Every structure is written in structure tokens, then in C-alpha cells.
Length: 391
Image (tube, rainbow, N blue to C red; front, side, top):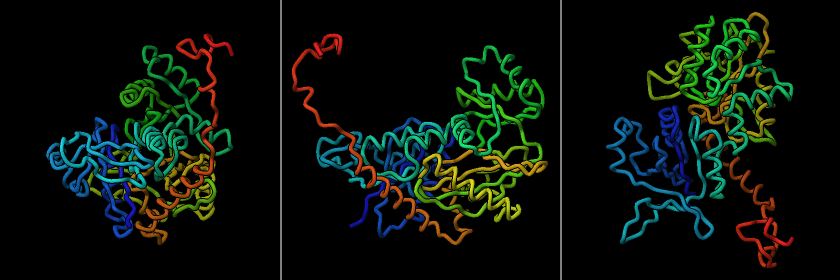
């Protein structure tokens, strides 16, 4: 009997379209003999839809028309299992679409990759692929990630953090940055990926402009020193906290000062797989070994699972290597970095699925309840809570 696997993608995120590309790629490479693949598309209003049209990337050119041939749906847990049912109930006939044995979220960005969707799936008590709630949240929040990694001795750049309530004193924020760093600096939203909202500032006015721009995409932003003579290196990791391994290293090729959203995704429907890159990266053997070792150690330290991509920066003036960020669900699931190592995409997906089942089995061994008859003991518990009790 086939395993029913819901592939969830889309969502209320600026990386919505990137998620669609990544998911369609993955579904095309999944083992159809082993899995009954159920595509579940989340609109930008966080509505769930399913249907055969969702397998075809061309259907998304006109989403309203596509959804006319799909079914709105919701996940429910009933009788010890998770089911996908019609959101708009029919008066006659079955509203059951399918049982769901495992969920595979292929989502990017805020509201979906940041632990929110993972928490929903965990509440449903269903195995799900990828990082858990905490590591997803940490990976999305660049400031929290920096603090944790810095505390553990990993190489990260220092930064200034600002919140949206400080925008009415933006000049003071600029003063703080200038007292700490020299220009140029990088300004970025704290919880976005795909280079959205990121820019480089070379003076005070461009700093203020960059901060205003970043605040359009997030209520919290970071400012950090720019590495002037920069070489970007990416490395993927697959595994879990117990055991993990690193892929080959890649060197993205950008057309501007910053690797932009356009560099990554515009110009085809292959997502990150279409980005211009050097594989293997043009780095020394010592740098490669350090990056791959550091990537695995950071992955395990943050408690990640499945496949991630960790982005590094090399300061060409000092040869210093820094961790830039971790992508807990990387674009295209970073399959191109594993194919370069001889691992087929279908094999990578299967390993991710098995890792999620392993984590679920381990969680079942933990006692999450404490049996007590406290509610049967009597006493006054009512609306006053402990103040109204005699305990």
C-alpha cells in the first residue's frame, strides 16, 4: 500500500512563488510507486487547495483559473489519524479527500518556514519533513541565529538590531550604526530570505534609505558590516542532530553587489537550480574542509533536520570565513549540490522522508502527558482559578 504524502507549498510569504517552483520540482522527482503524492497549495491568504492541476508549473500562470479546477480543503485529526477533507462540505456524498500519513512542507519565508507551519503539523501529530519548530524559528530569525552561533564560538559578523517602533528616531539608529561600524554596511530584514529587502549602504543617507526599505518587509532589521572583497560560498547539509554530512561547496555568481532575487530566480522556472554558479567553488582545499566541517557542526548545534543550505562569506582581504545564514528549507532543496556529489534528487528526497519518520518514532517514546485525577478531586476551580480554591 502506498504512503499518502501531502506536499505543502505556497503560503503568505514574499517567497511564495519560489516555494511553488521548489515544490513542483520536488514532486516531479518523488517515488510515485512508493508514495501517493497529494499536492496542497497554500494561497497568499493561507487557504488550502488540492488538485491534479497543482503538479503543473504552467497552471500557476493564472492562479484564479487554476483554483476553479481544484478543491479547497483542510486538515483534521480524527480517529487517531490525519485526514484531508473538503473545506466546503457537500450535503451528499463523501467529504473525505484522503488520509495523510506524512507531510512534506516545501515552503520559504515568513509565516511558513519560520516554525509556524511546523507547529501546526506538530499539533496535528503527523510526521513532517525538515527542521522542527525550534530550529525552523531560529534559522529564520537572523539575529537569534547569530547570537546562538556566536555564543558557541562559530564565526559570525557583529550586527545592530532595530525594531519598527524605532523608525520615528531613525537618525539615532543611524548614529548607533556609525558608532559601531564603518561604511559600507549591509541592511537586511531579520526574517526573510531570497535576498528580499537587502541592500548595501555606502553613506548615511543610503543607510537611512536602506533601513526604510528593509522595514517594508519586516518589523525587525539587521545592520552589519559589509565584507568589501567578498566571496560567497554555499554548502548544503543533510541529516539530523545525531548524524549529518555536507555536500560539495558552490560559489554563486552575482551580477550586482548583492546576490539579488533576480539573480536567483528570474530567467527560468528552475529556481535556485538556474542560478549561475561554480561547482565546485573556487576555494582552497583548506577552506573547503573548514566550510564543510563548520556547516555540519552548525547544523547539528542548531538541532536541524532534513536538508539545509548554509551560506558562508570569505573576506578575501583576511581569508576569514563567516557564517552568513542558514536556510532551513533552501530553494530547490539544494538538490543541485547533492547531484554534484553523485546523489540523485530522488535519493535525497527519500533520505529526507526517512529522517522525518525517524524523528517521529523517537518523539513517540517521550511521555508528553502526566496522568492525574486532579479534575476529579473536587474543590473550587471555577473562573477564579487558584484564588478561588482551597488548595
